[in-house]
Length: 350
Image 1 (spheres, rainbow, N blue to C red):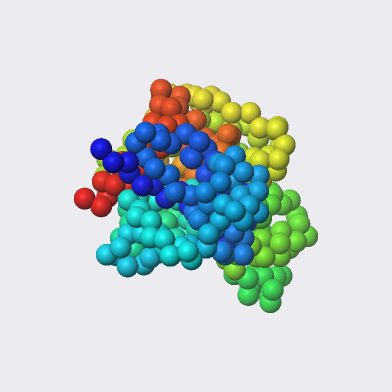
Image 2: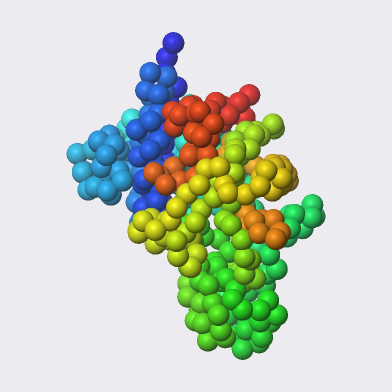
């Protein structure tokens, strides 16, 4: 039986480029090489697509793109009749399925999914429409209001408003009361996210957040434990056990996630069974309502109330990432999870 050609795409023109390199390293290190033949396709921060044939361990460090002997310019054919990668050297590599180990804008926001849909190549994760909706925190909230999912109160601001009418915008946001959170509507890994406690801090945070996105979300502060649920599946998804993150800092920002070592992780989460069951019920409802497939990580705050925070349709596969850890708690290995996700992707094409 011939192996299945799996193209793992990593990197990307995104603020989460480095996180993607770590995710791809995990996938490529743990994929079952007796069943799958991995093809490594990296995207640099400048947008070059490069077929990479070097050591996997050089991806996480960023060294992969400096080894010219391992690199060839390459691109995915948009023709549905080909399902392949072309290289500048004239090679034509058939691809059976794509595993996009990428995060952030130009990657998990529907743009890459649109290209893969045109190509006719099956891929891990949600389709173009669902990816775009879930990446946009404001759009996600608008849709979930139709099914009465409890969420934090929020104000949506545009870059134009922030630059031209900041005083009126601050007055509008202060209806939420301090402290509050400011975040770009379409980034991940808590990049550009700020907790603010005054009008001056709010003005600065809005100005900084709109550097990352032209749409910014200002949300009320919710006191509660940070709870995450992993969901996997297509038409009949399954929710993992609940996990909990104690950031060990003011909130779970980028530095807490990837730079320092202050955060603590609890699986299962330190919440009662009734709350855990309700969180998992909400997670499956959100996943189905937003049209997700393959995988997602869905985050909540649990205190006096259970409040939906956000959804990530291509969650990290780094050493600290909760998505794989939550399913590993039930007995799956990383290899099992990768195999299941590829199987789900191939099933979508049948």
